[in-house]
Length: 458
Image (cartoon, rainbow, N blue to C red; front, side):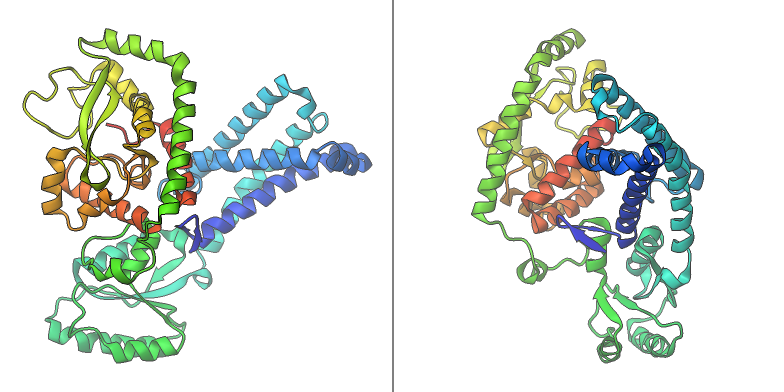
């Protein structure tokens, strides 16, 4: 997998994106030469033709990302992929046409864009067919063995099988129900088979909840020296899911691993960016403020803004500010998490939540220094005390400033149960480990997609 901005991407997906960029560029380049002939070189070099084609390529890739064409877990059916490719090209044509309407000089030459899209449609479909065929060939898959048994090992096996884009194939694995003393000999026998197997096994993933007394260290070392990769399942889960699994996590994971370093200079730079972005965001929202305020006031009786205590950096309590989306007596029975189709939410409030407009006043919290743009979402004090007792390492979330959006929000969404909060914590720990300005920019980019697609809100 390839690491970019502290996030791991399947190598196949990166290659697919690069190939699609080349195909888009080549189709419009070919259309230019076909329509202009010998004048094509002059137009491309002296009239910014290459730049115009590059911009169309970027727009096409951005639309493909928006329609989840690089997320095989979300879009896997062949017909669905082809349909979304047509959607991408349809939006692409609309954007180009709208731009040419206001800026006719952006055209390369008459009919170049029309011919380019005509060439691009079959080219992208054929590229996807080729990508699918190549990905299905065993010669291009990494053979892996999962050393372990039970639910813990089965979960990583299922995760690998659910992500064909990572190019891994689980071999030799089967669940066993033996006593710990009997398992070690079984692992030794399997590893002996792996040493002699043809085709060879490329990687061994150790997925044992308890390794003491079971792990065949000597046999693993022999295979390691023969060139077979050996790694713990936690490292693969971290790359695969973008989270740090709490089950089996030890304090040494924080003490000795890379990451989990909060540099004052880095925090200062992130805060400056947050303050500038919050100020610009509030100024841009001012023209829309009267309309949102009127809608909230007409939706139900009560104040315009909703203030609620939250736990910030270092455990400090502050009041988060939002547009009110619930009826005023929503918590007369006590504090509770919001749920899907929550009856306490007003009709206008549901729209504000889906569009995230209710979050805009939190930019004031960012200006005050209570929050940053990116970070773990601040939780209510009533829940924090309980969650600290139930979830290990939950207190680490308060070591940094909470955020308006975060890694858990873009990768998981809203959590309304202890199990869901546990999974969100795993994403938050990943963010704390890999925190950087580049990762923050990536989270903001993905947040725009989530807001536009209206995902994750309750």
